Length: 140
Ligand SMILES: CC(C)(COP(=O)(O)OP(=O)(O)OC[C@H]1O[C@@H](n2cnc3c(N)ncnc32)[C@H](O)[C@@H]1OP(=O)(O)O)[C@@H](O)C(=O)NCCC(=O)NCCS
Image (cartoon, rainbow, N blue to C red):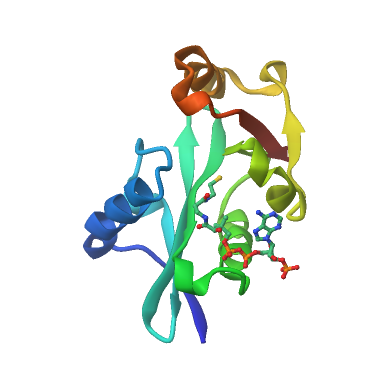
C-alpha cells in the first residue's frame, strides 16, 4: 500500500543518495522540503518543493525503478502541490514534457519566470551541460 509522509532528518542521507543517483539537480536538498513515498513500508519515491525568493519549485521527483508506472510520482506531485503555493514552477528535460503536462503544467519561457529562477534556467544552457535541453514549466 502506498503511503506518503513528510521526510525526517533520518532521511537526509538517503535523499542525497537517491537524487544524486538519478542525476537530478543536487542543490537545495533540505529534507524539510521533501515528501517520501513508501510502498508496504519500503522507500518507493520522493520529491520536494524548493523555496526560492518569491516563488516555489517542484523538484527532486524520483520513483525507484521497481515502483515506476504505478502512480507513485503522481501521488507525490498531488501531495506536494497540496502543501505548496501557486504558481508552482519546475525544470525538466524536454522528454519529460508530456509527463508533467498530464498534471497540468505548461511550458513557459524565460521571460515568464520569476527573477529567482531565471539564472537557474539559463545556467545549464550557458554551460551546455550534457547537451540536455531543459524546459521550464508552470502550474498556475
Ligand atoms: C519520472 C518518474 C518520477 C515517474 O515516476 P512514476 O512513479 O513511474 O510515475 P507515475 O506512475 O506516477 O506516472 C503517472 C502517469 O504518467 C505516465 N508516465 C510515466 N512516465 C511518463 C513519461 N515519460 N511521459 C508521459 N507519461 C508518463 C504513467 O503511465 C502514468 O500514467 P497513468 O496515471 O495514466 O497510468 C520516474 O520515471 C523517475 O524517477 N525517473 C527518473 C528520475 C527523473 O527523471 N525524474 C524527473 C526529473 S524532471
